[in-house]
Image 1: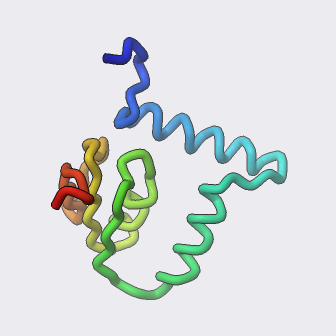
Image 2: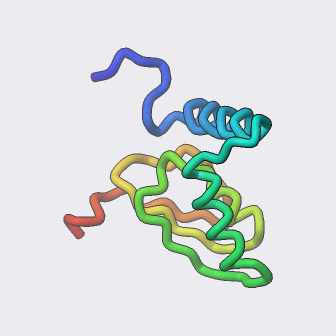
Length: 97
């Protein structure tokens, strides 16, 4: 068992990583997450979708989707730390089911 305060499914860890991403952008840098977000936002603009995110326990992208009006299911073996009425979380191993 880890003794760290910031576990992988910690909302604090996810938010700290997002803050680091924003700081990087202030200096004209781009993270891999920026590339991912840009691609996704370009392809879902103007739509209301049902979205399946596999392995998204450490991403705020599913939360951004539900806030934009999409219905999202996060499927991961770790718990997703955020809650929202349009968010369904399935905690299981995708390769086992």
